[in-house]
Length: 291
Image (tube, rainbow, N blue to C red):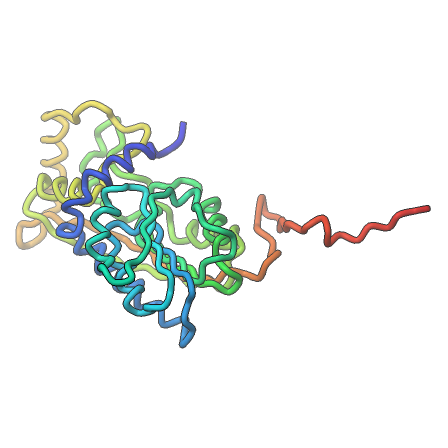
C-alpha cells in the first residue's frame, strides 16, 4: 500500500483553494525566501520558468514580473488552485496555467531553465523519482529551487496524538534524505539549508482549522477514515495543553528545508542502487562488424 493517498491530497488542496492565501502566512514567507535564491542566476534571463505545485501562483506572478519576456508556467494538481491563480496572471500577457501532477510533468525534455517548487513535496513518497522527472525537463545547467517540510514539523501535534493507534501527522523527510534524493537524480552542486518556525495558537481547534484552510490535512493511506471521535480529540487536547508557552498559547513547530541545485550536462549518470547508471543512445555506440 502506498504511504500517501494522492486523491485525498488533491481533494484537500481543491477544498482549500478559496481560503489558502489568507491562511498561508508561513508558506508565503518560505516562498519569499526561496525567491531570494533566484540571485544565483546572476544576470541570466531564463526563457522558460516552471512553478510546480504553484497553488494560487503568487511565486509564478513574481517570476513573471521579474522576467516579463520569459514563458512562465504555473502548474498544480488541484484545478481550483489554478482558478485562483488566474487572479495573479493579469490580463496583459498572462502566464500559463497547467493542471498536472509533479510526479509526471507534461513538459518536453530539457525545455525548462528554472524549476521552482515550494512546499509541495511532502506527500510524494518517491523523492528520487520526482527529482529525476525534474531533471528530465530542465535544460543542462538549469536551476532547481525547492523547499519541503522537515521531520520536526508539527512535532507537538504528533506527540499529542501519540496514544491514538492511527497516524495523524505525515513522516516528513530528513534533510539528509532530501539531499540524497537530489544526488541520486544526478543534480550537481546541491546546497541545502533549514529553518525552524514556531507559530502559536489559542487552542488545538484553531490549529486544526488552519491546517484545513491550507489543505494540509491527513493524507496518509493508514489514516482513520472515520471521525477521530470526541474522546480521542479531548485526550489530544489535554496532552497538547501541557506544551503551552508563557503566554498560554500552544506552539506549533514547522521545519522547512530549502535546496537549490543545477541540472547536469546531458548524459550524466543517475545514481541507482549505489551505482552510476547512464543512458547512451545506441547510435553513439561504435560497432565493429566482421566480414
